[in-house]
Length: 163
Image 1 (cartoon, rainbow, N blue to C red):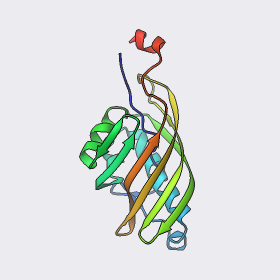
Image 2 (cartoon, rainbow, N blue to C red; image 1 turned 30 degrees about the vertical axis):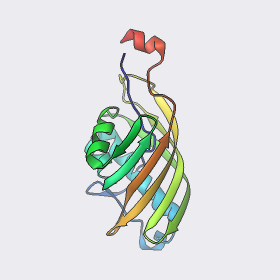
Image 3 (cartoon, rainbow, N blue to C red; image 1 turned 90 degrees about the vertical axis):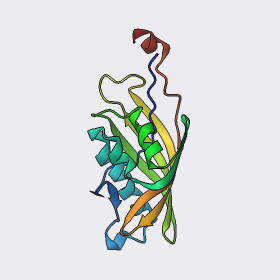
C-alpha cells in the first residue's frame, strides 16, 4: 500500500530570495496579514518544482513542523518529511485568514488546498488548516513553527488495491 503525506501548510506563492520569503514592501511591513500573504506566496511559488529543499528553505534551521504524520524538528528532518509527498507538478493555493504581529514575530493562520502531481499515490486534492509563527531573519520572514491539520493521507482502499 502506498502512502503519500501532504502537509497543507505550504505557505503560498510570492517573491523569494534564495528560497526565503522576501519581506513585503516597506509600506506593508506593519501589516501582519500582508507578511503572512507574502510568506504563503513563497510556498506557492516553490511547490511546482517539486524540490523539497526550496520548501525547507522557508524554515529556520531549528524550526518545528507538527502535522498528523508526526513532529519534524530542524530543517533537515523537515526536508525528509517533504520528500515523502512532494513531486514535481504539485501545487498549493493558500488563503491566510489572520495575522498578528509582536515585534519580530508574526502569527498567521489560514487554509490551503494542495493538488498532487499527476500520477501521485493518495488523494488528488487535500484541504488543510494551518498556523505558523514567522520570525524576522534580516529583511525576510521564515517559519519557526508550523502546525497543519488535514485528513489522513493514505489512499482510499480502491486506490490502494490498484497499486
